Length: 434
Image (cartoon, rainbow, N blue to C red; front, side, top):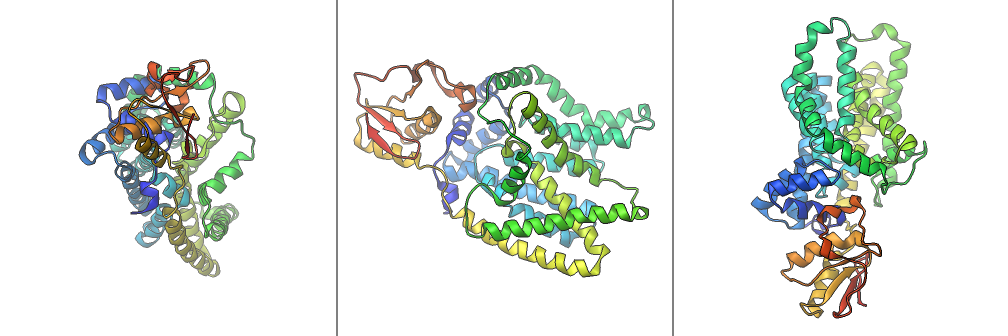
C-alpha cells in the first residue's frame, strides 16, 4: 500500500476521526463550539461506519473527492471550451497537481470544499441554478471560508443582471436561496467562531510576498521530491503563456466575445485571495493556502482556458503549448508517484505502540507538546488500551484552534502525576520515561 495512505495521523486528521466517531448530534454541537462547519464530519461519520477508521480508509474519502473534483473540472472545461480532449488534459493537470495530491491524502475537508466550489461553478455556467444553489449551500456548511467563495458568484450575477434587476429576482432567488438560508441559519455560529479567531490564531502575519509564496506552494506542493524543479519551471512557462493570451485579447479588442463566463473564474480565484489578504493585513492573520484550496483548481481551469484560446490564435505558439503541456503531464505523473511514496507525518502511531508494549495499564502517557495530544488519544483507543492520557498546560488552558473541544477537563493537567509512571511522546515520534 502507498506509504502516504497509511502513515500516522497528524493532529488535524486525528481531530477529524475522533469527532466523526461521535453521534451526529454531538458532531453538530461540537463543531458549533469549534471553528468549522460540520458537513465533512457528517460524511466522514457514515464513511467510517461503513468501512472503519484505519488511516487508508478515512483518507480514501478525500481521495474520492479529489477524483470527483477532476471529473467536475472536466465537465466545467467542456462547457467553456467545447473540446473534450483539452478538457481531459486540463482535468488531468488538476488530478496531478502536487498540492492537491498532498491534501487528497489527508482526512480533512479540503478536497470536499474544492469539489463543491468547482461543481457549483459548473452548474451555474450551465444555468442549473437550483443545483448550483445546493452546492453553494453545502460549501458554506463545509468550511468557514465558503462565504468568501459565495461573494464572487454574487458579484458576477450582479454584473450580468445589473439592467432589469427587478425582473430577474426569481433567478436570484433560485441561485442564492440555499446558501443564504445556510448562512443565516449558521450566522450566530459564524460570528462567535470569527470572534474567537480575532482573539488569537496560530497563523503568522503576512506581507505581500504571500502571493508569490502561495503560487509556489500551489504548484510545487509543500514537500520535497526529485521532479519538483522541472514541474515548477514548466508551470511557470505555461502560466506565463496563458496570461499572455489576455494581452493579445486586449490588443485585438475587436475580437472580444460577448460571452464572459471566464469572468466568473477570475472572480473566484482572485476575490477570495484578496479578501483574506486584506483581513490578514488589517484584522487578524488567517491567510493560509489550504484554507483557499478551491482557488487552485479554478486557476488551473482559467489557465487551460487561456492556453486553448492562445493555441487557436497562433499556429507557431500552438506547437510550443502542445510540447510544454505534454512535458507537464509527464513530470506531473512522475511527481505524483514520488509524492505518494513519501511519508511526511511523524510516526506517532509507532511511538504509542512501542510505549504500550513496555508499559503497564496504569502508566500515564503525555505528549511533549499538546499539539500531539489528539493523535496519542486516538491511537491508545485504537490499540485497545485504557492508559490515562493527559496533556500538560501550566495554566490549564488549551488554544481552541488545536481542537480543544475534544479535550476533556480531566485530561488537561497543570502538574505531572506523582503516583504513576509517566511516558513522554515527542513530536517527532520518539518517546522516553519521565
